[in-house]
Image (cartoon, rainbow, N blue to C red; front, side, top):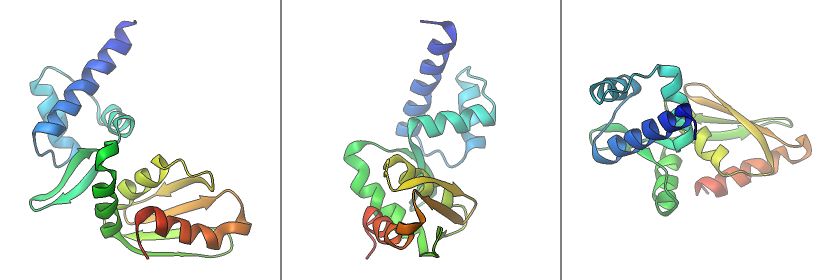
Length: 153
């Protein structure tokens, strides 16, 4: 195994451990804690790591914190994700999901992780997600599919 792969695996293990044992609120805090552990990482690399690990921010009583999406936690995560959604609407071509500020990327990541064949992909900003359907013929049905995935009816 190459040194680079070992370095990535080690960094991922430390990130998972930190997120599981501490309340990590943002990437700046995580970069600082990693540095204290002797791991220097850029924000771009950390963003990629968080995506690869399936880390999302979920609301808690003390604010939004990072959590790792585990198979057993999916129903809990789904209810948190559903709480982030303000509206789902669309036209003949696209579906637009409005979320609370700062929550769109977590919702989009959750949708992407579903590997839904009807979705080509998502594009997320701060509070808006565009879901691109595989075919425009099914754009309206995609809205219902998203509501089902998120547990919204």
